[in-house]
Image 1: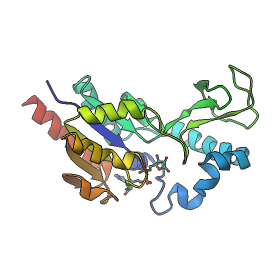
Image 2: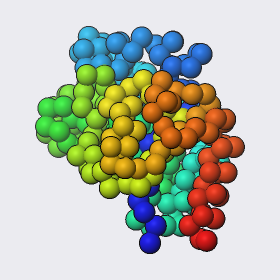
Image 3: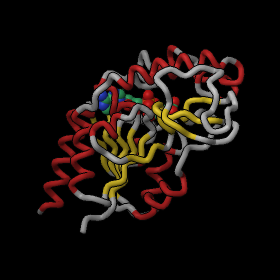
Length: 233
Ligand code: APR
């Protein structure tokens, strides 16, 4: 029996699939003020601008393909059913395209949410401010993504997984956004080994037992192969 692994992923995992990260040079937040496009207040001020931003990202994500790192994580998860929990901050759907089952703590571009009644459904490619909710007909629909100032999803479930895990890995995330940035500490408190896989040391690098530095498509498949070999032995 293999012990539980929790893997947290961020935008760096999808960078080599052609999807931009947030805080790197030319990242999304350098070109779009996040207070305008990723806060409830920004949405209240200008819902059309917010929908335009997410419509463009939804179209781009729909045309993107998972890379070798997504595929390696799917291989790991499928190789040891039930032992590998993937928690992602990414809303692009590339984990699923690679064959993984994941916990979407920041929601999904492919889903829409009615903030009048809480109903969720598959988002059309293009959303607009006056789209009616299919359940209650209120014209209060928004992308089902978690914005700054909002509580990420599935936090109780994630906390439980962190408490039970023997190994925690963070891949392609800058460690600048909470609560995900604190997962490494939660896992350590629970006695887990911890490893960071990233292009460069993150803000919380020093909290990890081990660091593997490089592009995700190189370092993630190598890490997965080593784990599979260790478990098979
Ligand atoms: N391989 C591995 N890591 C990479 C690669 C790559 N090819 N390219 C970039 N990175 C790393 C960067 O060095 C950086 O540390 O990925 C990280 C991306 O950081 P962010 O842009 O801050 O993305 P992320 O950590 O996922 O952001 C968290 O912030 O705005 C919110 O909701 C949004 O989910 C997002 C959250």
